[in-house]
Length: 434
Image (cartoon, rainbow, N blue to C red):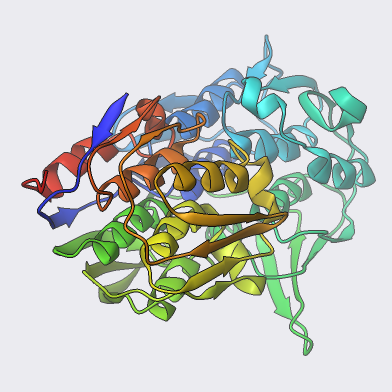
């Protein structure tokens, strides 16, 4: 349990943890590459450590520390695990490894915790079956644990039914081992960390945009991948909590150093700027093929906006804290086309409506999003995190501007993606107004 009260001001410099998405991919892809890779600023959160544990169970030597050192086994070097792989609470681990395991010439079972076992996996399973994989789960084969008899895949052309970087990446993992080219057509561009990393490793991967704005990614199965050293950029989805915290607090100025600003991830910046946030990028540069910058954010007068359509895949993980910004902003904000939020670590749509309501916000729940009527002063309350790391941090941000004390149960769930969140909050929250 943790209590939050409004500080007199927010001030300081924060280096947010390494990007969660890139950390997962750095471990998985370097594990099947040739050579040794050093991965610095790796996110040692619960989700990414689940990926590390699974790759170790598949025979990969991974040395903890900063940098994390991965001894690549090559494309054909993984071995059948002795027991069941456990993705714990990590949907990224489950989906990406399902794609990888579908291509391996052995049998695997992968499961997760109670929350993950409720999350549907049919979006990944169905195209993998089209490629020739045998994947079975429970509840009409849509939920973990998944039993995978891999190998013998063929490349396909597949139109993704939803814009999902996890689905795209899972199929690219399988396509590395398939006979023939794999082509994926996206309904909207999604984060492209897998494509960037595969290109850096020497894979023949190309992206094309049609005149109609439809994007396709094609992968020719490589003979080998070359291990790559990299420094993982700061996670923009972790930085998002500080961006909103500083924007909504009346006395705030924060600098976030070395944050990844991949354009497939910067929806949070676009939405906040549309709401009137005073933010700017400094020292823009490229590191390891990924664009990086320092971000400065100051107290702002926010107004409501509409969030939906093509920007949703670029900001899906940031919607919990954007909902907090909307609750404080003047005017009304609508969030639509985000039904995927219902099958995250919690039903984030329902949970946000419930918990922001406890704090005094006026929130209407939609099937695919929320309508938030801003402008009311939030009031401290006892809130539930629903076992969801992003909801916990979003509610903590709300507590920074809510009158009185806000209490969160299971506050340590933030360790899933941001182990040092509470320490960073204590460091930049100066004084108290209570």
